[in-house]
Image (spheres, protein in one colour):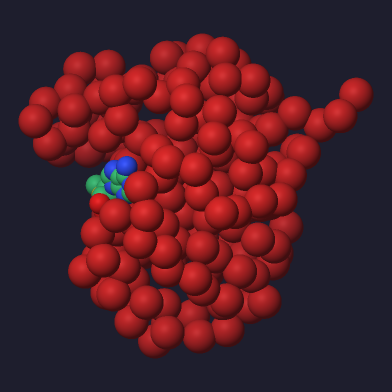
Length: 179
Ligand SMILES: C[S@@+](CC[C@H](N)C(=O)[O-])C[C@H]1O[C@@H](n2cnc3c(N)ncnc32)[C@H](O)[C@@H]1O
């Protein structure tokens, strides 16, 4: 997928420019760059990954292509508590499928978001894993998982064909707003 494809997967989930976002399992930053493109200058993104080398590449690319986006690169395990709060949004692209027991991670992620904040996942459209993608989840399963974790208004944003596991989808879900 090229940059335009990645932007296309996120586009309908980004309704406001700027704001405070995190990309969990950001890797070398393919989706961080897409997010920066959509959020525009003045946004702030915290990119989290346990792989320091990948984050180094991400920082270099972001500095070159989106220097006006605020960026923190944090080497951390996103299954552990993170020092982030009141985020407008979180992206988890091809990263949640490394976690078998997703419920506690989703509870953590929910607690990082402001009320009404959004979580965008990008994931393979399959419930059957392999050694490289151990625990993927199809969109119907994601709808249920997100609801079980207390998210609301889950909907699919886009789908693209993939050589691996058939397809990749993006979906958005929201932390509840107070009644
Ligand atoms: C397949 S890559 C996806 C990278 C990027 N999001 C993308 O779509 O191009 C998965 C990334 O998640 C990171 N990752 C997996 N489990 C993690 C965890 N528990 N904490 C932090 N990073 C994790 C890996 O280090 C890797 O960089």
